[in-house]
Length: 388
Image 1 (cartoon, one colour):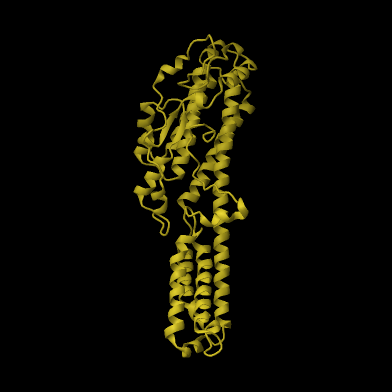
Image 2 (cartoon, helix red, strand yellow):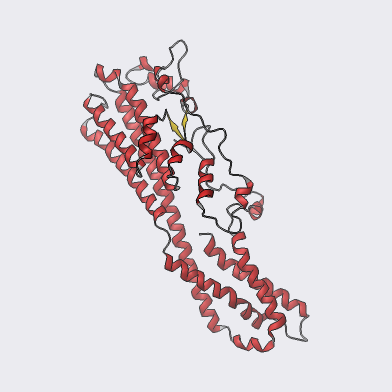
């Protein structure tokens, strides 16, 4: 639900279109692996030209037969294929775990809100709206904190700058809420929003008293924009510096339903496990509400709420596992070293087998073919490494 609001930041995923037979893909630079593979391919192209013009014909005897080199290139191809498969497996597992997290916590929200609206005890009815306000706020906050943690947005400033309170008018339709409440047990309360800080009221009704909790902090108007210069800054070289990452995180803050109080901000800044702390708030609130007679559901059914909350936390920790565990360093180092050797040796092999034969072809023809083939062979191999 964090991503379905009007003021939500644009998705960080690179969304592209394949119209016009896919040709626009060739001209998109941001997120492309092509620029980062170009330096290696260009170096091999230059080396091929030097070999063709200055190495001499005797050097071609070094690769008189390409069979031994074919074995090496074949093994390198398989190693890159395995690396690519592992990379895509990590990508899809991470995306699946995040979706599981959001789906399970969304199930918990639906069950708790519906069960609590079905409460029949008078004392529990009086405090029901306030509890549902707090529950929805804490669930929204927990989801935002989980996404922050997964993008390494864990500084104290992240609580103040990279989270903003979202007005419930941006999420709930007053008319839709009215019809939904009329179908519940307590239809007389349909004009009351289930969220803290709400301004959603029905015609002729009084303003929601929960709106006095505090002034909503809207999406920062002066938040840094991830500009074209920022995108071009990592066009040829990946820049993992913390300042650049923090600027990117500030440009895409997460919305939170309801008002984030000062006490909540202080508590979150004092712990490294913010998601687990927020989960504790949710569980303690559910336990107290159950003891007060709210959340009208039989124990076997009510236990499902705890189960889906736990399943959502499992999805979060599994996604965090991928974030905290990079691809094995020895494997990555081995591949990179062999790719460097490959980029240095390809021009010699190509020159030996496709280079000029004096008196048979024009001198420039062999140079062009050798340079172009060396460029594209190395480019394809490095793309397989860099894009994952």
